Figure 1: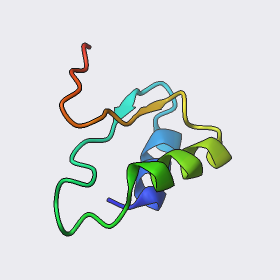
Figure 2: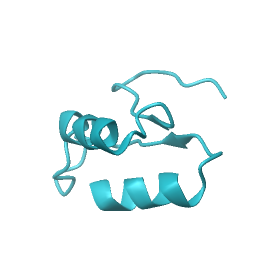
Figure 3: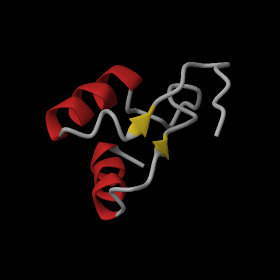
Length: 60
């Protein structure tokens, strides 16, 4: 997924909490956490989308 896809998912289901994983851990993932965070802030979606750090545990 790229930033456009993440934004689309978040907008399509505003009540959902989106968790983006496998960032920067695969060679084909060109989107960085910093780039995605910046885009989400611009779109007003940073509170809806969680981008955990490597090894971070997310409790649901």
